[in-house]
Length: 246
Image (cartoon, rainbow, N blue to C red; front, side, top):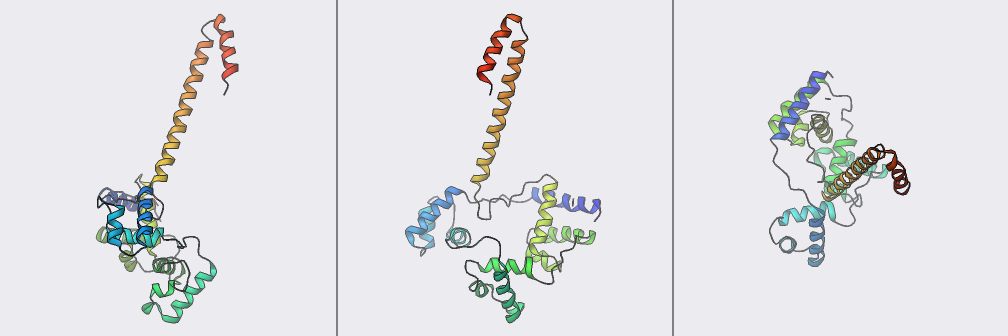
């Protein structure tokens, strides 16, 4: 793939990001509130759960339901797929046929997995028709074309780009965006709350500030020790005590 083609996708990705509306990601505090409300209501009345957890109506009952069932519910399995799990999915698709498959039914045979997970496993990894070769210039041009028409609706775009998975298309687009210096707004929306990122940033800033302060202190000591021979011995004494485009 040529550099020109890579630049075209990257530029289009960055331009699209500038027009994206902001997404309100779930925080650790919100997850805690929701978990407590669900426990109190025994997962029965989601309108009441939403009202109790978020009296300011910042989260709807539908949002709470999806967050609980797809992210927070105990027993969910999110780790790597095993060969046995893959075999179950493959056998079910072969037995029923992709045109008649019900992913929720397949998921019932794979403990801990959701229908959405099973569907994505098939279309992104197990489908024998997947094209896993490097992207061509034409494919990059098609990606820009279809994204401009459908936005970030990867399922619709995948329907137009036979052989490329939804996940592969999304990764191609977002990697181009990151190369252009864009912000990946997806982070923090796949089960991990945004709080961890903030904590890590604060820790990094604190470490940087401490390092800068230490460097400035050392410079002042060096300047002081070179001022006069009479203060040199005193400086030495202090130093002994303080040494620390695809």
